[in-house]
Image 1 (cartoon, one colour):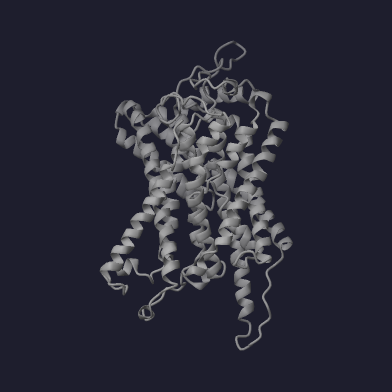
Image 2: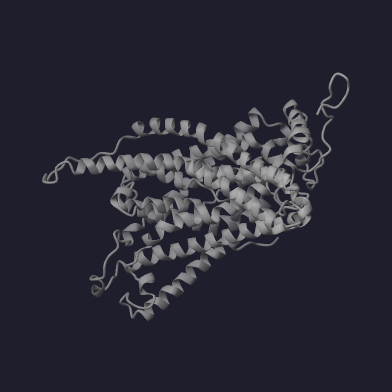
Length: 554
């Protein structure tokens, strides 16, 4: 079979690093090495990567991530996703929490025993664990598509990755607040008496004083954020569906206006959720699912045919841009760490940035231990939770085998959300800091190294692993792979008994028409009450509810 040496994301990361390296070289030559050339203000060896921190988070989180999340929800195999929803949520919530706690405990033990340079508190270890818990589905899923992965495995990895990011951000915000409170208390204690030459030592709180309040706050936030974010996304999706249905866009054939309305409305759910301190990822993801089920069929034929290419193009361009940014950032951190160790004396007079990025911003022992902790933590959540799901509620034909579990464990790549979260740890002034500057710098460089390392090393090995475990099947045709929005491979949201998924053995039984009372009630509600209001495909639904006289109820 074809061997994947490097994924598209990995190649873009390398390209970004190479282009940035060439830019540095040109800038250095033009400035004659004194940091004062035509490009000196941008690429000076004194500039520091912290200049990017005020914007890179917003660029990734608000500019490049939404198209990827929206397209993920829009093309989701909805029937299979909701059939496996409980399992996906177990992985996303329970699995992420296990990974965070295991990673935090491991790094705290290493820090206490002097195996790593940084002296992290347990709260800071929890924060770092939440940063690198966010998985990136894009590079792995592109490999899964080309290797003929069974649909069940594909849907589990896809669903977990999409929802894992949102939960990781919830945990990050909780632990970031705790770290900020802890650091403010330390600084206040250190400045109680500025004339005291022997101030008392400032001790970090023990782990057993940190975990209970953090878990309590997490439970409250989850019960508030996840349901409200889901409701907001579905509500915005229904609003867009009702608008496209009432405006009669199917007969107008103004594809540019139709698709603009869909995109703007979807982005509205992301913005509102973020302003309301909810999860924009959850909201936008379920808005995409809802719009695909209703609004898509209210569009004109030209708009439907264009939607697939447009949304996929926006998502692919955003992914490429993010990968380039990661490559550029990685070279910046490496270059500043190297150059600041050998800065010529003539540059000392140049104004220095607030935080100097030198070699002490890198902890290679921490990078290695973190990578091992990630693999071990993912194994501790993937295999036990899958075994629990198989034993408790999954039918024999739907059980997840050892081979699939191994691929799920291996495919936990780290992506741009981790880096976007990490760069917020360096504040523009002392009041914005959540921890000592050096510790924040070490977290950023470690996160970036793990993101690039997993995409360059783990992602290309996914396809050979699938073939070695004999999970690979013949890749389905493009019109069946669910990669295009106009394809029949996109399964409607529990609304159609006609499925055209490719034959994948037991997967046919999984995707067969559901016959539970809840599903039957949903079919009736969707077909005879929701679709007249919001539009959608006129499927052959179940027998409509009838009155005592035998007439069809309205």
